[in-house]
Amino acid sequence: MEKKRVEVDRLIKKARSSWWEDGIVELFTGMALIIISALGILSSVSGGSLSYIFSIAWILSLIVFILSGQKIIKFLKRKLVWSRIGYAKPAKERATFKNGKWTIGAFVCMLGSIILYTHPISSLLMSCFVSGIFMSIFEYSGLTRFAIIGLLNLVTGVTLFILGFKVNTGVFINLSVTGILLLLTGIMTWNQFQRRRTVNG
Image 1 (cartoon, rainbow, N blue to C red):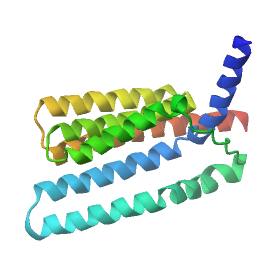
Image 2 (tube, rainbow, N blue to C red):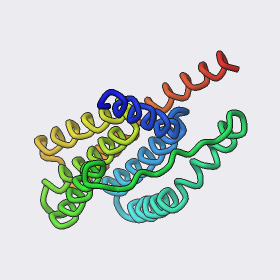
Image 3 (cartoon, rainbow, N blue to C red):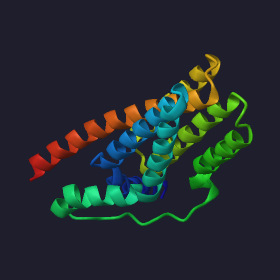
């Protein structure tokens, strides 16, 4: 019975992981994080009117990515993937503490980061938030690369905290590192997806 349940869980995770099998989500999210963090850093280090321009650009890009991110990803998938191999969306799992503990922990860290915003530990808590999100994706999909990104994000956050980086700078550097990692895994995943499609096609 236990063996059968393990096999069912494996098949469920395999179906869920199909959302990330082409690397498009990682490519888009990675580029979005790099752009947002770059604008944030430029806003922090520049002065006068340039700082104001970068701040406005940062706010606008953040709004666009938050409000339109899913729509853009689905558009890219529809044009590049679904039109050729079809579309299958795994059913959502009912939320419980067992399958949502990483997400809960992540948002507790985010709340702590907001409350302690002026304290240097805020950037470390924000790193824990991002790491928790990736661990949640790993638990949901079973894809090891997300656990690795989550751990590397946490290591980066701890390192920046020990080195004494300012809150804003630390958060933006951490996000840029995360964006670069996502971009790299996205490129590798997309290339693998293309090769599999060529062989199977």
